[in-house]
Image: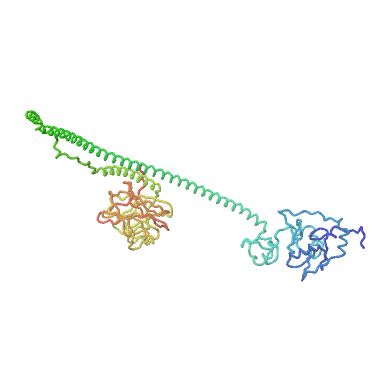
Length: 540
């Protein structure tokens, strides 16, 4: 029987798993003791059954039996035993993998056991000779992730060729000829790069925030433009409605005045007729009265005054003519048309000014021009010459048609340019897509990639299938071409007359568009003038 004052230490009666006094102590085949609950839970979480102290492996899960001697000693000395205080694990620290219940802070990690230990659970590695050979390092979390899967060694180097972490054995095999550095050295390099990456990310964030603000500003401007357009439309249409109302009032007043004049005439004639009827009725009464007189003297004296009829009007030539309204409505509509024309002129002028704001500076590309075309040095003028130049082959060049494109192309947004066509008897102006055919005969329609206005023999047409014939108000001097790529719109304007000529709508653009010019044939001195790309001169 043990003596009451036997020198039992805290470690003698403490479970190495829970670090508390044994509770129902059991022994493993290797002779170590644990709480039944602690060792049972420990093995429930393991794939292989081993001793938490000496790491001895068991083929099968041992059948645990209560250690009677330890139970008696715990009952006798347990209440006076206290576990040595150790620090509990904090959120950012590595916990002990062996502790159950409340986990303590790990003080070392074993690269052989792949386990982190607190001071108490580390004791076997400091005492047992076989365990003392294990490599202990400062506490590390997720030890399995830090080990080389091929060599079961710590990943402590970095391969700069393949940009992966490697172990020492890797540098002697698969990465033998690759430059390697320590993780710390590569960490410092990558940390420096991280700063640049962060700066780049912040710059990208700022650029996108700027884009957001630009989009918001654009949306705000669009709303302001829409509000102005609505307000202007309301103003114009209100003025037109007032004009129509005034025309209606003037028409009503004119018709009513003419009707009133006719009615007054009729009333006057009726009054005259009624007066004559009254006079004749009186005369009739006198005649009847006289007819009853038997006094010969009185009859004859009275008869002398009755033989002359009362003064009356010759009504056979009198008529009430209905008022004439011929031309009344027409004159009112003429006045309205004049007002409408004035408003339309203002609108056309405003529309042209608006599209002229999208002017682009374009120059002709000699690599696309037919060899018989002559371009000015500044690339702004073109006319057809008498000599066909010998030029090197170029897939961009037109081989038969007298066409030329500009150097500049447009794949989005809006653009506008003006071409002077003065003194020419034939010409073509417009835009063409990049993939148009340029060899041999060409059919110029929107379907083949051409949106062009053609003038020749006094006829103005938009090339389509079929052609769209357009009215000529006067001789064209300068043509403006406006394209809204995103809206699928191509519009042509008579710049000097400030008149819209034609618009192709619903166009589908999916590739770059080039401004297009053709001076057409120069023959025997006719049509020799140049087409000239002119700068926009907005009128006040």
